[in-house]
Structures are given as structure tokens and as C-alpha cells.
Length: 243
Image 1 (tube, rainbow, N blue to C red):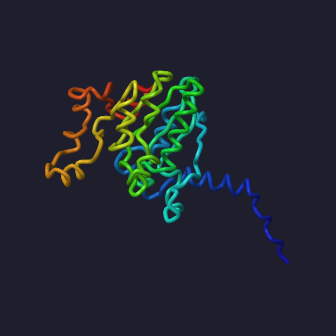
Image 2 (cartoon, rainbow, N blue to C red):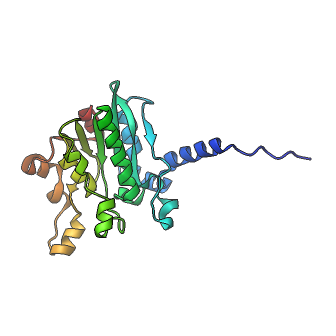
Image 3 (cartoon, rainbow, N blue to C red):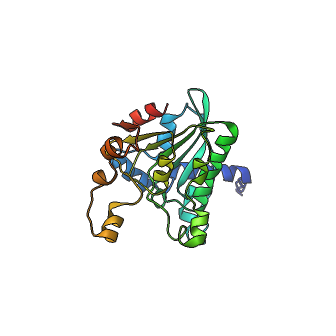
């Protein structure tokens, strides 16, 4: 007679779930697609930027408020936490494009806001890795949506209590572009786009076709708008500029 295997403890089950979410993110196929384009996931950006084994993540198991989306929105499109760079503590957040294109939503925005508030309270620099697809629909629709997925007003009200650094590491529309506009130092990786909305939306709204580069490429922001302080030729160079 065989003996039944002991049931896993709740703590072990929880830890296994956290490990699985951090490994699979929004899907292994989406991770493979990012790598096929020669790009990094937000977790890989964080791992290569901060001191080894220093990243302490919060909100890993958060998910969309929409019951229909809870099972396929791990982390709700944002990865946030605290780490060290050169031994110095920082707070860090970034858009996870494997989950609904890293779109800004209620829970994801709360995570980012909490990390920023903790950074201000602790006097730590705040680093943001931007590549969002914009605001998530329907989260941001209507007066209630705008109130629950707000622009980062607290960044503007910080009165330089802490330095804020943003790196645009992918195609970035909406939320991360607002954060960049309120940052003290902005790095943009060559070949990415930084804009309030995408060329597709502009074409639908105005009938005018515009390329990613002309809309919000590194040359536009470093030479004309002044939005970008440093143009990096690679993610690795962007990481070094942040350090």
C-alpha cells in the first residue's frame, strides 16, 4: 500500500507561485518574442542594472481588478520594488510588456505609486524603466478611471526631495512618457519611441501618418524637444548612464 505524498504547506505553495510568476511573467512565448527582437524583459533590465541579488520585489502576485483578467495579468503589467546600485538603496519600477503590453491600470498604478511614496519617505532615488503601451481600456475610461489611473501628480509635487531617473528602453506611450517629463534625468535607448500616444492613434485621429522615429525618436527628443538628457546606443549603455 503506497503512502500519499504529504500536502504542500501554504507557505511553500505561495513561494512556488511567486517563483512561477517571476519566471513565466505574462507568458514564455512573449518572453521569447522579446528576445527574438534582441530586447530584454523588464526583469532582465532590473537584474542587469542593480547590484546582484539586491532586488526585493513587491506586488508580484497582484493582478487586474477585472475578474475576467485576473488569471492573465500577473503583476498587472508592472514590476516594482527596492534594490541597491553601487551599494546605495533605490526604489525601482518598470513596465512589463508581456502583460497587456505593460499598459497602465488601476492595480499596476497603485504599485508604482506605492514604490514612489516609499522612496520619498526613505530618501531614496526612484528609477523607472519605461516601455508601456499606454493606458489600459477600460480601466482609464471616464472620470472614475482617470481618478484611479492618475497621471503621476506626486512626482511633480515632490519638490526635488529625491532624484527621479527614467530610462526609455522600448516603445513607450502614455504613462511612462509622463513620468519621463517629470524626471530629473532621462535616458532613451536609440531605436525606441517616447510619445504620449502611438502613430496609429495619431493617424486615426488626424489622418496624418507619422513614423515612430519622427514622432518620438531619440534624435527628436535630444535635439528638438529637450526631453531626453542622454541617448544610449544599447540597453547596457542606458544602465550605465543610470548608475
